[in-house]
Each structure stands twice: as structure tokens, then as C-alpha cells.
Length: 96
Image (tube, rainbow, N blue to C red; front, top):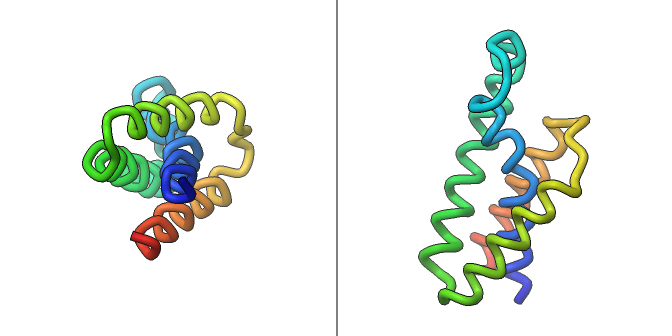
């Protein structure tokens, strides 16, 4: 159960920065490129681990919970949010 929460948190905290290149203007992207690259790597790794390690219902619940939490979290401090997402992913890998 804790591993699903860690993956859900990693998904939620990195999702906004992952979708930013598809929705923002070019000037915003240049300023946030390093943070977006790390967030994209964290999001894709968490997504892959969710789909491969969990059963269908557990993976579905983790994905839905992560997407729901992504809309709740504020993204005013992107470096801190992405660092916490990476810490959640690393914690999951340590527990696995």
C-alpha cells in the first residue's frame, strides 16, 4: 500500500511539469527546461513502474489518484516539487 502511495505521489508531483511543454509558450519553456526534463524523467519512470509492477486495479487506482492529486497541488516552487517527486520515486525503488 505504501509503495502505491509513493508512486502516486511521484506521478502527482511531476505531472504538471511533464505536460508544461505541450501547453506553454516558448519563453516559459526556456526558463524551466532543466526542471521540466527532470520532472519528465520522474513522471515517465513512475508511470512505467506503475503499469509494470502493479495489478490492473491497483495500477488504475494509483494512476487516478496521482492525476487527481496533480490538480490539487500548487506548482509555485517547481524545484522543490520535482525534488520531492524524485525522492518519492527513489523511496519506492528502495522499498522494492
